Image (cartoon, rainbow, N blue to C red; front, top):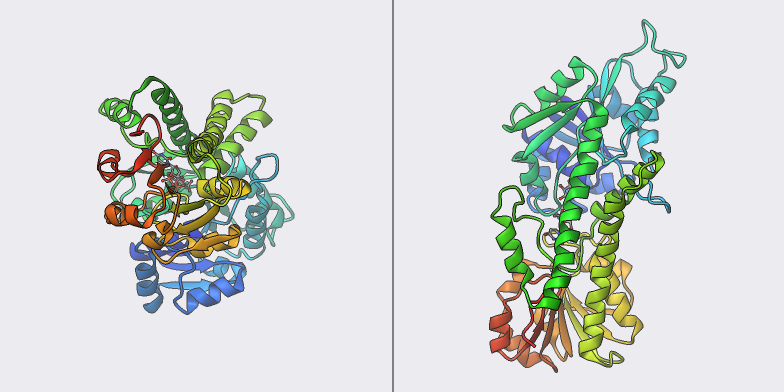
Length: 441
Ligand code: UGA
Protein backbone atom coordinates (compact mmCIF):
# COMPACT_ATOMS: atom_id res chain seq x y z
CA UNK A 1 0.00 0.00 0.00
CA UNK A 2 1.14 3.58 -0.61
CA UNK A 3 1.40 5.28 2.75
CA UNK A 4 2.47 8.77 3.83
CA UNK A 5 3.60 9.57 7.35
CA UNK A 6 3.49 13.23 8.22
CA UNK A 7 5.92 14.12 11.00
CA UNK A 8 9.35 12.49 11.05
CA UNK A 9 10.08 12.43 14.77
CA UNK A 10 10.44 9.31 16.93
CA UNK A 11 6.96 8.01 16.20
CA UNK A 12 6.89 8.94 12.51
CA UNK A 13 10.28 7.50 11.66
CA UNK A 14 9.76 4.26 13.55
CA UNK A 15 6.29 3.83 12.01
CA UNK A 16 7.64 4.63 8.54
CA UNK A 17 10.58 2.24 8.79
CA UNK A 18 8.43 -0.57 10.19
CA UNK A 19 5.63 -0.14 7.62
CA UNK A 20 8.27 -0.32 4.87
CA UNK A 21 9.63 -3.44 6.55
CA UNK A 22 6.27 -5.19 6.42
CA UNK A 23 5.95 -4.49 2.71
CA UNK A 24 4.46 -1.05 2.15
CA UNK A 25 5.77 1.88 0.14
CA UNK A 26 6.22 4.79 2.50
CA UNK A 27 7.02 8.46 2.25
CA UNK A 28 8.02 10.21 5.48
CA UNK A 29 7.21 13.91 5.43
CA UNK A 30 8.48 16.72 7.63
CA UNK A 31 8.43 20.49 7.25
CA UNK A 32 11.98 20.69 8.61
CA UNK A 33 13.95 20.79 5.35
CA UNK A 34 17.28 20.18 7.08
CA UNK A 35 15.96 17.02 8.75
CA UNK A 36 14.65 15.70 5.42
CA UNK A 37 17.94 16.50 3.72
CA UNK A 38 19.80 14.51 6.38
CA UNK A 39 17.40 11.57 6.16
CA UNK A 40 17.77 11.50 2.37
CA UNK A 41 21.54 11.40 2.88
CA UNK A 42 21.18 8.44 5.24
CA UNK A 43 21.71 10.32 8.48
CA UNK A 44 19.29 9.43 11.29
CA UNK A 45 18.66 12.39 13.60
CA UNK A 46 17.72 10.30 16.69
CA UNK A 47 19.12 7.28 18.50
CA UNK A 48 16.74 4.34 18.55
CA UNK A 49 18.15 0.79 18.51
CA UNK A 50 17.62 -0.90 15.11
CA UNK A 51 16.13 2.19 13.43
CA UNK A 52 19.18 3.22 11.44
CA UNK A 53 19.53 -0.24 9.86
CA UNK A 54 15.88 -0.35 8.78
CA UNK A 55 15.92 3.19 7.40
CA UNK A 56 19.11 2.46 5.49
CA UNK A 57 17.80 -0.78 4.00
CA UNK A 58 14.49 0.63 2.74
CA UNK A 59 15.93 3.98 1.71
CA UNK A 60 18.36 2.13 -0.54
CA UNK A 61 15.68 0.08 -2.26
CA UNK A 62 13.43 3.18 -2.46
CA UNK A 63 10.56 1.64 -0.53
CA UNK A 64 11.07 4.48 1.92
CA UNK A 65 11.45 8.04 0.69
CA UNK A 66 11.51 11.44 2.36
CA UNK A 67 9.83 14.68 1.42
CA UNK A 68 9.01 18.15 2.72
CA UNK A 69 5.80 18.31 0.73
CA UNK A 70 2.54 17.17 2.29
CA UNK A 71 0.82 18.02 -1.00
CA UNK A 72 2.98 15.63 -3.00
CA UNK A 73 2.74 12.85 -0.43
CA UNK A 74 -1.01 13.25 0.00
CA UNK A 75 -1.58 12.99 -3.74
CA UNK A 76 0.24 9.69 -4.06
CA UNK A 77 -0.65 7.92 -0.82
CA UNK A 78 -4.07 6.51 -0.04
CA UNK A 79 -3.41 6.35 3.69
CA UNK A 80 -1.88 9.27 5.59
CA UNK A 81 -0.66 8.79 9.13
CA UNK A 82 -0.42 11.95 11.21
CA UNK A 83 2.56 11.73 13.55
CA UNK A 84 3.35 15.38 14.20
CA UNK A 85 4.15 16.79 17.64
CA UNK A 86 1.40 17.71 20.09
CA UNK A 87 3.32 19.78 22.68
CA UNK A 88 1.74 20.95 25.94
CA UNK A 89 0.32 24.44 26.23
CA UNK A 90 0.84 26.35 29.48
CA UNK A 91 -2.47 25.04 30.90
CA UNK A 92 -1.51 21.42 30.22
CA UNK A 93 -3.74 21.08 27.20
CA UNK A 94 -2.26 19.51 24.06
CA UNK A 95 -1.46 22.06 21.37
CA UNK A 96 -3.00 20.73 18.15
CA UNK A 97 -1.87 23.44 15.76
CA UNK A 98 0.34 21.03 13.78
CA UNK A 99 -2.45 18.47 13.52
CA UNK A 100 -4.81 21.10 12.12
CA UNK A 101 -2.19 22.23 9.60
CA UNK A 102 -1.72 18.70 8.33
CA UNK A 103 -5.47 18.09 8.02
CA UNK A 104 -5.89 21.34 6.12
CA UNK A 105 -2.96 20.73 3.80
CA UNK A 106 -4.01 17.14 3.05
CA UNK A 107 -7.58 18.26 2.34
CA UNK A 108 -6.50 20.96 -0.08
CA UNK A 109 -4.55 18.43 -2.08
CA UNK A 110 -7.03 15.58 -2.08
CA UNK A 111 -8.15 14.35 -5.47
CA UNK A 112 -9.23 10.83 -4.51
CA UNK A 113 -10.30 8.87 -1.41
CA UNK A 114 -7.92 9.21 1.55
CA UNK A 115 -7.78 7.69 4.97
CA UNK A 116 -6.26 10.04 7.57
CA UNK A 117 -4.99 8.19 10.61
CA UNK A 118 -4.13 9.81 13.95
CA UNK A 119 -0.91 8.31 15.23
CA UNK A 120 0.19 11.11 17.55
CA UNK A 121 -1.30 11.09 21.02
CA UNK A 122 -4.23 13.48 20.86
CA UNK A 123 -7.12 14.37 23.16
CA UNK A 124 -10.36 12.47 22.65
CA UNK A 125 -12.57 14.07 19.99
CA UNK A 126 -9.61 15.22 17.88
CA UNK A 127 -10.80 12.78 15.20
CA UNK A 128 -14.02 14.80 14.84
CA UNK A 129 -12.02 18.01 14.58
CA UNK A 130 -9.79 16.58 11.88
CA UNK A 131 -12.80 15.40 9.89
CA UNK A 132 -14.41 18.83 10.13
CA UNK A 133 -11.19 20.59 9.09
CA UNK A 134 -10.87 18.30 6.07
CA UNK A 135 -14.49 18.90 5.07
CA UNK A 136 -14.01 22.66 5.30
CA UNK A 137 -10.91 22.57 3.15
CA UNK A 138 -11.79 20.08 0.42
CA UNK A 139 -11.20 21.68 -2.97
CA UNK A 140 -14.31 20.29 -4.58
CA UNK A 141 -16.81 20.97 -1.83
CA UNK A 142 -17.99 24.17 -0.28
CA UNK A 143 -17.67 22.84 3.22
CA UNK A 144 -20.30 20.16 3.09
CA UNK A 145 -20.25 16.49 2.18
CA UNK A 146 -22.07 16.26 -1.12
CA UNK A 147 -22.23 13.93 -4.03
CA UNK A 148 -19.16 14.36 -6.14
CA UNK A 149 -16.96 15.65 -3.32
CA UNK A 150 -13.85 13.63 -2.57
CA UNK A 151 -14.49 10.96 0.03
CA UNK A 152 -12.32 10.45 3.08
CA UNK A 153 -12.23 8.78 6.48
CA UNK A 154 -10.52 9.66 9.73
CA UNK A 155 -9.26 6.88 11.98
CA UNK A 156 -7.33 6.62 15.21
CA UNK A 157 -4.52 4.11 15.50
CA UNK A 158 -2.62 5.05 18.66
CA UNK A 159 0.98 3.99 19.05
CA UNK A 160 2.22 2.12 22.10
CA UNK A 161 5.91 2.39 21.28
CA UNK A 162 8.45 2.80 24.04
CA UNK A 163 11.58 4.70 23.17
CA UNK A 164 14.50 2.32 23.26
CA UNK A 165 12.42 -0.68 22.16
CA UNK A 166 10.17 1.01 19.62
CA UNK A 167 10.99 -1.31 16.70
CA UNK A 168 10.20 -4.51 18.58
CA UNK A 169 7.12 -2.85 20.16
CA UNK A 170 5.91 -2.13 16.62
CA UNK A 171 6.69 -5.58 15.21
CA UNK A 172 5.48 -7.60 18.22
CA UNK A 173 2.80 -5.45 19.82
CA UNK A 174 0.53 -6.63 22.65
CA UNK A 175 -2.38 -5.35 20.56
CA UNK A 176 -3.22 -3.02 17.70
CA UNK A 177 -6.03 -0.54 18.33
CA UNK A 178 -8.02 0.65 15.36
CA UNK A 179 -10.63 3.37 15.88
CA UNK A 180 -12.81 3.73 12.79
CA UNK A 181 -16.17 5.05 11.68
CA UNK A 182 -16.48 3.07 8.43
CA UNK A 183 -15.94 -0.46 7.15
CA UNK A 184 -13.68 0.90 4.44
CA UNK A 185 -11.30 2.45 6.97
CA UNK A 186 -11.31 -0.75 9.03
CA UNK A 187 -10.54 -2.85 5.95
CA UNK A 188 -7.62 -0.61 4.96
CA UNK A 189 -6.06 -0.61 8.42
CA UNK A 190 -6.49 -4.37 8.80
CA UNK A 191 -4.78 -4.77 5.41
CA UNK A 192 -1.86 -2.57 6.48
CA UNK A 193 -1.24 -4.57 9.65
CA UNK A 194 -1.94 -8.00 8.11
CA UNK A 195 1.71 -9.18 8.40
CA UNK A 196 1.71 -8.48 12.16
CA UNK A 197 0.16 -11.28 14.16
CA UNK A 198 -1.55 -9.90 17.23
CA UNK A 199 -4.94 -9.08 18.70
CA UNK A 200 -6.69 -6.25 16.84
CA UNK A 201 -9.13 -4.18 18.88
CA UNK A 202 -11.62 -2.36 16.67
CA UNK A 203 -13.56 0.54 18.19
CA UNK A 204 -14.94 3.89 17.17
CA UNK A 205 -12.51 6.82 16.95
CA UNK A 206 -13.28 8.38 20.35
CA UNK A 207 -12.81 5.04 22.12
CA UNK A 208 -9.43 4.44 20.46
CA UNK A 209 -8.35 7.92 21.54
CA UNK A 210 -9.44 7.12 25.10
CA UNK A 211 -7.54 3.81 25.07
CA UNK A 212 -4.35 5.75 24.51
CA UNK A 213 -5.13 8.33 27.24
CA UNK A 214 -6.06 5.60 29.68
CA UNK A 215 -3.08 3.32 28.92
CA UNK A 216 -0.38 5.94 29.40
CA UNK A 217 -2.08 7.43 32.45
CA UNK A 218 -2.51 4.01 34.02
CA UNK A 219 1.18 3.22 33.51
CA UNK A 220 2.10 6.57 35.06
CA UNK A 221 -0.24 5.73 37.95
CA UNK A 222 1.54 2.41 38.51
CA UNK A 223 4.85 4.24 38.74
CA UNK A 224 3.59 6.90 41.16
CA UNK A 225 1.86 4.21 43.22
CA UNK A 226 5.05 2.22 43.68
CA UNK A 227 6.97 5.43 44.36
CA UNK A 228 4.52 6.24 47.16
CA UNK A 229 4.94 2.70 48.49
CA UNK A 230 8.71 3.32 48.34
CA UNK A 231 8.32 6.34 50.60
CA UNK A 232 6.66 4.21 53.27
CA UNK A 233 9.16 1.36 52.76
CA UNK A 234 11.95 3.80 53.60
CA UNK A 235 10.19 4.77 56.83
CA UNK A 236 9.30 1.27 58.04
CA UNK A 237 12.43 -0.58 56.96
CA UNK A 238 10.93 -2.55 54.06
CA UNK A 239 12.47 -3.08 50.61
CA UNK A 240 10.35 -1.72 47.75
CA UNK A 241 12.03 -3.98 45.17
CA UNK A 242 10.86 -7.05 47.06
CA UNK A 243 7.43 -5.52 47.59
CA UNK A 244 7.13 -5.04 43.81
CA UNK A 245 8.29 -8.61 43.22
CA UNK A 246 5.80 -9.97 45.70
CA UNK A 247 2.97 -7.94 44.17
CA UNK A 248 4.06 -8.63 40.61
CA UNK A 249 3.54 -12.41 40.71
CA UNK A 250 -0.17 -11.70 41.05
CA UNK A 251 -1.27 -11.80 37.42
CA UNK A 252 -3.93 -9.20 38.11
CA UNK A 253 -1.16 -6.75 39.02
CA UNK A 254 1.93 -7.73 37.00
CA UNK A 255 5.53 -6.82 37.78
CA UNK A 256 6.18 -4.30 34.99
CA UNK A 257 6.13 -0.55 35.62
CA UNK A 258 6.57 -1.14 39.33
CA UNK A 259 10.18 0.03 39.43
CA UNK A 260 10.50 2.72 42.04
CA UNK A 261 12.88 5.54 41.17
CA UNK A 262 13.14 9.27 40.70
CA UNK A 263 9.91 9.38 38.75
CA UNK A 264 8.81 9.16 35.16
CA UNK A 265 9.98 11.60 32.50
CA UNK A 266 10.12 11.72 28.72
CA UNK A 267 7.97 13.27 26.06
CA UNK A 268 4.91 11.14 26.80
CA UNK A 269 3.86 10.48 30.40
CA UNK A 270 4.22 14.00 31.86
CA UNK A 271 2.48 15.56 28.85
CA UNK A 272 -0.18 12.88 28.52
CA UNK A 273 -1.10 12.97 32.21
CA UNK A 274 -1.46 16.76 32.00
CA UNK A 275 -3.56 16.48 28.85
CA UNK A 276 -5.88 13.85 30.36
CA UNK A 277 -6.40 15.95 33.50
CA UNK A 278 -7.20 18.94 31.29
CA UNK A 279 -9.55 16.96 29.04
CA UNK A 280 -11.41 15.74 32.12
CA UNK A 281 -11.62 19.28 33.48
CA UNK A 282 -12.99 20.60 30.20
CA UNK A 283 -15.66 17.94 30.37
CA UNK A 284 -16.60 18.77 33.94
CA UNK A 285 -14.75 15.99 35.77
CA UNK A 286 -12.04 16.42 38.39
CA UNK A 287 -9.57 13.57 37.70
CA UNK A 288 -8.11 13.75 41.20
CA UNK A 289 -6.25 10.42 41.03
CA UNK A 290 -4.19 11.70 38.12
CA UNK A 291 -3.48 14.98 39.87
CA UNK A 292 -1.96 12.98 42.71
CA UNK A 293 0.02 10.87 40.24
CA UNK A 294 1.57 14.05 38.88
CA UNK A 295 2.26 15.44 42.35
CA UNK A 296 3.88 12.22 43.59
CA UNK A 297 6.08 12.19 40.50
CA UNK A 298 7.29 15.70 41.27
CA UNK A 299 7.84 14.97 44.97
CA UNK A 300 9.85 11.87 44.13
CA UNK A 301 12.56 14.00 42.53
CA UNK A 302 12.44 16.49 45.38
CA UNK A 303 12.88 13.84 48.06
CA UNK A 304 15.89 12.41 46.17
CA UNK A 305 17.41 15.90 46.06
CA UNK A 306 16.75 16.35 49.80
CA UNK A 307 18.41 13.01 50.54
CA UNK A 308 21.56 14.08 48.66
CA UNK A 309 21.58 17.46 50.42
CA UNK A 310 21.21 15.73 53.76
CA UNK A 311 23.97 13.15 53.28
CA UNK A 312 26.47 15.42 51.50
CA UNK A 313 25.97 18.19 54.09
CA UNK A 314 27.67 21.11 52.34
CA UNK A 315 27.16 21.09 48.58
CA UNK A 316 29.17 24.17 47.68
CA UNK A 317 32.22 23.18 45.63
CA UNK A 318 31.54 19.46 46.08
CA UNK A 319 32.00 17.42 42.92
CA UNK A 320 29.03 15.28 41.99
CA UNK A 321 29.46 12.49 39.42
CA UNK A 322 26.35 11.70 37.39
CA UNK A 323 25.89 8.45 35.50
CA UNK A 324 22.98 8.61 33.08
CA UNK A 325 21.16 11.70 31.81
CA UNK A 326 18.54 10.41 29.35
CA UNK A 327 14.98 10.05 30.70
CA UNK A 328 15.42 6.28 30.37
CA UNK A 329 18.03 3.88 28.96
CA UNK A 330 18.57 3.15 25.25
CA UNK A 331 17.59 6.59 24.10
CA UNK A 332 19.29 9.95 23.61
CA UNK A 333 16.08 11.73 24.60
CA UNK A 334 16.41 14.35 27.34
CA UNK A 335 12.84 15.65 27.27
CA UNK A 336 11.52 16.02 30.85
CA UNK A 337 14.41 13.86 32.10
CA UNK A 338 14.58 13.72 35.91
CA UNK A 339 18.33 14.36 35.61
CA UNK A 340 17.62 17.96 34.55
CA UNK A 341 15.81 18.83 37.80
CA UNK A 342 18.27 16.97 40.00
CA UNK A 343 21.34 18.54 38.39
CA UNK A 344 19.92 22.06 38.38
CA UNK A 345 18.92 21.81 42.06
CA UNK A 346 22.41 20.68 43.08
CA UNK A 347 24.08 23.33 40.93
CA UNK A 348 21.92 25.95 42.61
CA UNK A 349 23.58 24.93 45.90
CA UNK A 350 27.03 25.29 44.36
CA UNK A 351 27.81 21.66 43.44
CA UNK A 352 30.06 20.94 40.45
CA UNK A 353 28.67 18.33 38.09
CA UNK A 354 30.65 15.91 35.94
CA UNK A 355 28.41 13.65 33.91
CA UNK A 356 28.46 10.73 31.54
CA UNK A 357 25.69 9.24 29.41
CA UNK A 358 26.25 6.74 26.58
CA UNK A 359 23.94 8.58 24.10
CA UNK A 360 22.34 11.70 25.54
CA UNK A 361 25.28 14.04 26.17
CA UNK A 362 24.83 16.07 22.95
CA UNK A 363 21.19 16.71 23.74
CA UNK A 364 21.96 17.33 27.42
CA UNK A 365 24.57 19.93 26.48
CA UNK A 366 21.81 21.97 24.84
CA UNK A 367 19.75 21.98 28.04
CA UNK A 368 22.24 22.16 30.91
CA UNK A 369 24.85 24.75 31.76
CA UNK A 370 28.24 24.34 33.43
CA UNK A 371 28.26 20.57 33.32
CA UNK A 372 31.53 18.82 32.58
CA UNK A 373 30.66 16.03 30.14
CA UNK A 374 33.03 13.08 30.43
CA UNK A 375 34.08 10.46 27.87
CA UNK A 376 33.34 7.47 30.13
CA UNK A 377 31.87 6.62 33.55
CA UNK A 378 35.30 6.42 35.21
CA UNK A 379 36.23 9.91 34.09
CA UNK A 380 32.95 11.17 35.57
CA UNK A 381 33.76 9.51 38.91
CA UNK A 382 37.27 10.92 39.18
CA UNK A 383 37.64 13.11 42.26
CA UNK A 384 33.90 13.06 43.00
CA UNK A 385 32.39 13.41 46.46
CA UNK A 386 29.44 11.26 45.48
CA UNK A 387 28.02 9.40 42.53
CA UNK A 388 24.42 9.68 41.29
CA UNK A 389 23.00 6.98 39.07
CA UNK A 390 20.06 8.60 37.26
CA UNK A 391 19.47 6.33 34.22
CA UNK A 392 19.83 2.56 34.37
CA UNK A 393 21.97 1.95 31.27
CA UNK A 394 23.12 -1.70 31.13
CA UNK A 395 26.68 -0.40 30.73
CA UNK A 396 26.64 0.71 34.37
CA UNK A 397 26.19 -2.82 35.66
CA UNK A 398 29.46 -4.18 34.28
CA UNK A 399 31.89 -1.59 35.60
CA UNK A 400 34.88 -2.12 37.86
CA UNK A 401 33.41 -0.58 41.00
CA UNK A 402 36.65 -1.10 42.95
CA UNK A 403 38.31 1.18 40.42
CA UNK A 404 35.46 3.67 40.73
CA UNK A 405 35.96 3.59 44.51
CA UNK A 406 39.66 4.38 44.02
CA UNK A 407 38.90 7.29 41.70
CA UNK A 408 36.36 8.97 43.96
CA UNK A 409 37.18 11.32 46.82
CA UNK A 410 34.27 10.07 48.93
CA UNK A 411 32.63 6.68 48.39
CA UNK A 412 28.97 7.62 48.43
CA UNK A 413 26.38 6.42 45.89
CA UNK A 414 22.84 7.73 45.39
CA UNK A 415 21.08 5.27 43.12
CA UNK A 416 17.96 6.90 41.68
CA UNK A 417 17.00 3.72 39.85
CA UNK A 418 17.82 1.00 42.40
CA UNK A 419 20.12 -0.40 39.76
CA UNK A 420 23.33 -1.28 41.57
CA UNK A 421 23.66 -4.13 44.01
CA UNK A 422 23.78 -2.51 47.44
CA UNK A 423 25.55 -5.49 48.99
CA UNK A 424 28.42 -5.70 46.51
CA UNK A 425 29.06 -1.95 46.48
CA UNK A 426 28.77 -2.01 50.27
CA UNK A 427 31.49 -4.69 50.39
CA UNK A 428 33.73 -2.34 48.43
CA UNK A 429 33.23 0.34 51.06
CA UNK A 430 30.59 2.46 49.41
CA UNK A 431 27.85 4.13 51.39
CA UNK A 432 24.80 3.34 49.26
CA UNK A 433 21.42 5.08 49.18
CA UNK A 434 18.74 3.74 46.84
CA UNK A 435 15.00 4.37 46.69
CA UNK A 436 12.47 2.81 49.03
CA UNK A 437 14.54 1.38 51.82
CA UNK A 438 17.53 0.17 49.82
CA UNK A 439 20.50 1.52 51.69
CA UNK A 440 23.43 0.25 53.67
CA UNK A 441 24.14 3.27 55.80
C1 UGA B 1 5.55 5.47 26.95
C2 UGA B 1 4.70 4.20 26.92
O1 UGA B 1 5.35 3.15 27.64
C3 UGA B 1 4.44 3.73 25.50
O2 UGA B 1 3.57 2.62 25.49
C4 UGA B 1 3.80 4.90 24.73
O3 UGA B 1 3.57 4.55 23.38
C5 UGA B 1 4.72 6.11 24.77
O4 UGA B 1 4.92 6.47 26.14
C6 UGA B 1 4.05 7.22 24.02
O5 UGA B 1 2.98 7.65 24.42
O6 UGA B 1 4.55 7.61 22.96
P1 UGA B 1 8.19 5.99 26.78
O7 UGA B 1 7.84 7.35 27.28
O8 UGA B 1 9.07 5.86 25.59
O9 UGA B 1 6.84 5.16 26.42
O10 UGA B 1 8.94 5.23 27.94
P2 UGA B 1 8.56 4.24 29.15
O11 UGA B 1 9.36 3.02 29.00
O12 UGA B 1 7.11 4.07 29.29
O13 UGA B 1 9.13 5.06 30.40
C7 UGA B 1 8.58 6.32 30.79
C8 UGA B 1 9.21 6.82 32.05
O14 UGA B 1 8.79 6.04 33.17
C9 UGA B 1 10.74 6.77 32.07
O15 UGA B 1 11.24 7.97 32.64
C10 UGA B 1 11.05 5.59 32.96
O16 UGA B 1 12.29 5.71 33.61
C11 UGA B 1 9.91 5.63 33.95
N1 UGA B 1 9.60 4.34 34.57
C12 UGA B 1 9.14 3.30 33.82
C13 UGA B 1 9.75 4.19 35.94
O17 UGA B 1 10.15 5.12 36.66
N2 UGA B 1 9.43 2.97 36.51
C14 UGA B 1 8.98 1.92 35.79
O18 UGA B 1 8.70 0.86 36.39
C15 UGA B 1 8.84 2.09 34.40
